[in-house]
Image (cartoon, rainbow, N blue to C red; front, side):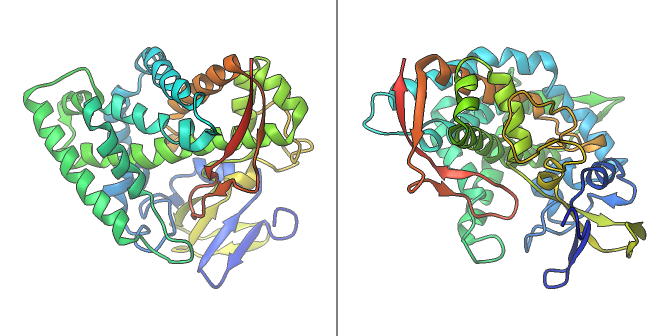
Length: 371
């Protein structure tokens, strides 16, 4: 597609796709013509200007609503606050690793990567640790999809209703009894006297489930998988080059490789005209492997310059949680590298995720060589 159809039309599913780095990068920044008003997912039931903001918060908004929401919620994502989470994240990771390494078999996703982001979101949000198992289960079920069945299944809707109720109770409590957590910060956030409504706070906390849970888990699974397929890079990663391992994994195998937009006016690219009102899918995963920007892009290389990757988007919608995702991935891989000198993956038993919006694994049995 990048070479032969950089502006591709999918007639069956009624959308256009952009796959070159220059086009995707420009569209991510052009929020006037490439609108987020209907959300970023083409799934049935999710592409809706009424529904999307409830689940995706300001990710499904354009300026000035987006500008207002982002300025308010960003108070909970300051660099200082994210940095302060590192010790707590490390404690969470070590707890899971201590248990997992005593078991007969180690599964990176089931034992660590799939659990840590959920716990971190609970910790950040202000969910009491006693509620983590129940809330974490609802978070996972919200993202549940059935292979080959379009739309959002009843199990996911039931979990969403449960989480809405839980978060509503939490927000009400924080208005009367504020604490040092995200829910309290959002309740108290104010810009020129403007504050968030309960519904807006709940919507943002919902956004953290999808944006900060599965994506980080899949980032870790993808990093583990591709390092295994590249022994020299695996050796470098386990030898201490954790940051480079995280960054190249973000480029090489995007955990959320596509994002949809609604075109507000006619656009012509590469001699092809896309009419106003059409749905356009921005293929960030493809852009991250565009040879015009990344030489030999199919090679997994920890020495690569990854600064131009579009994994976290661009422009006003650049991912607010990018620092947290990088921190979680770094801590998990650091703790693994401190205990593991090498590993092998049982690829026949590894299970991939089958969903339109995420790319990764739900199971990755591994044999570890401990230090």
